[in-house]
Length: 309
Image (tube, rainbow, N blue to C red; front, top):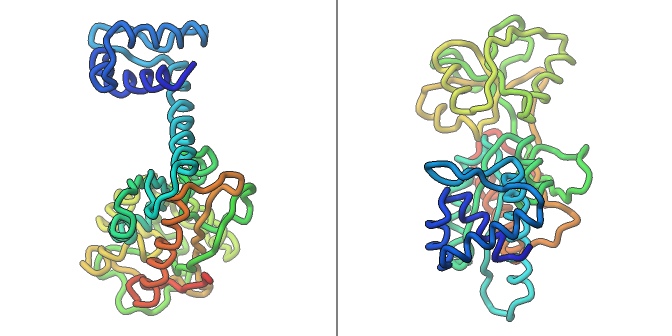
């Protein structure tokens, strides 16, 4: 198989049509059909099901598309690294942000990267810590903000921020900023992130150490839904301030820092140690680090303490 065949495969997968794929790739229809036929012959399995309304990937086709996209990304990175030296950085920056930090950081990060390196395309993927870690290990992203990854091998990580966690409730439930003791949650209804969220393990560990049982009335993998359920009075939750800053300021949620014991999470900037960073990734990492430090120093990130270099 060659690059043209892989590009044809991906184009058909994205458009659902060999005709539209040919138009995108500036290929005549016989060439498109030939590329797919050769791929299927080499793989020994059909890659598409030809249906009335278009072409649909088979399971084998979906697998090959996934690996094909990764291969093309790696080739693009290689071209950027070995191409003629220029004074500007170009290419694609792929970065994963935690769902809780994306609203706080994403907009300003894009603005700063584009202002400094206008030839860089910024691709941001948002998810819970478990998902972001999987994407980083698989090579789908190059940089990622994660919770402390001391248990993960093969990563190069720099600790940047310790962020205090808050107990959140409906409007008016908490007033002032006095710490709320963890034991105050005993037997209370809780809306929890699901198991793929790294924050879930932090919360459960703290509750277990304190000998506290809570009533989990709902769990979700959607941060907005989690906050909505709390705002509507279904229960309480624990989140970092970066995830709820707008809601606290607007008064749609109320909150207090968790106290006795204090509860926090550590955020690190991580990359795969075995992969050479692309020029775009190497250029963007210090921009993201400086942005986070600036937000902490200017108190635009309440409850956060800077621990980076």
